[in-house]
Image (cartoon, rainbow, N blue to C red; front, side):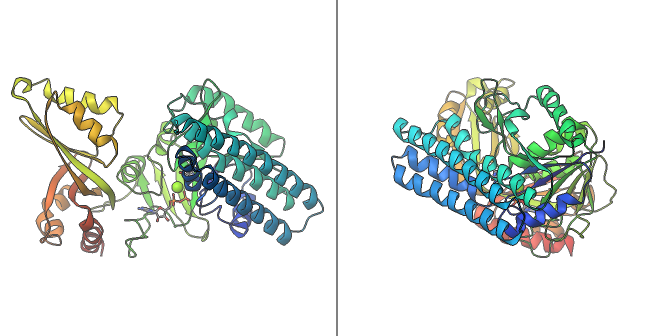
Length: 454
Ligand code: ADP
Ligand code: ASP
Ligand code: MG
């Protein structure tokens, strides 16, 4: 059985018209397993509702939950109206019953949060996973009205994780065991529809895989069932040389490697969750990024080794960064300094985006976070700390040695009127990083893209 795992994101799930497109795409596959995000904006609204509840504004939180309910009911109503089927009354009834139950549960979680007066990570996950729980059930029901054999499968039965709420780590062995049941569902003629983004901890509480986590759910399932392809269906025709929202002349790449795609995602390209490629790479499953609005476009194929000889592959950027410099106390100079710095970072599980060291200091580019102040307190024992906020990180992926060597003309010339805070290049991984002022990030990315890609 050659399974194709198809993932549809928030923009694909926006309204009844896109739901129809999603279902039409699914029809083209013999053995599809489908993973869906929440409808557009829902996850953010859920998080907002949770925060309002925690701050005591339960009424504001309920308003949001009501608007989420209304939006989904409208999608279902419009869908069923445009796609007449003898069973539509039954389908509508089951959709609305399910919605009522889910929104009832959501309101209970919000009430609990407001009583607590704070939002625990566990509660935040339970609330924010509600969007995928709702969308996956409703889409499966709407499939029935097109005469498809779509079947909702609860993601908690498949995606088993630890209990690190907000960024849970999958238990691949358990996921493999549980995903075996998908083959039976397919053999019986049904198409499984699964909510992405969330899973279940050993104590049965809901966990989430981090923002954009539905991509990761899809690749975990794809890895577990040994899929033929994992396909990320979104609103652009693949992975581009730069974020097409900000760099209009960016072009889709025909083929890239797992490594380069992971680096792009890690350094800010939102098109994929940074962990997506891992499960695919482990089993050498090709990952396609395709445009659901232009299915005829080739999209991008992500494979072990991509065939190209470009001077630079793509450009990513990350806003809201800070530069944190720790200068060692004299007593701590030498070998123990760097391990101490990194063990503090480890205790907060903070990923470092770029780093530069001198004999007795280290400068780290790190996502701007509320934790920074706390972090600098922890560094006090090791050295003196300075923090510069308002920075941005610009990264060239797949940057050849020639491009890096010619960086005066290719990179610094377009940026000649700029302050550069940090530069790094690694030949082995072909990553070129520049840290500059955040407000200069976008115009600089556009200029560099123009110089390198036109
Ligand atoms: P989905 O809702 O399908 O998960 P996302 O919004 O998460 O979609 O990801 C798709 C978006 O990623 C695109 O609309 C695009 O603006 C953004 N993006 C950022 N960098 C890139 C890139 N290098 N290539 C393609 N898209 C990118
Ligand atoms: N809905 C979740 C989010 O917005 C997961 C996803 O869309 O991938 O982060
Ligand atoms: Mg996404």
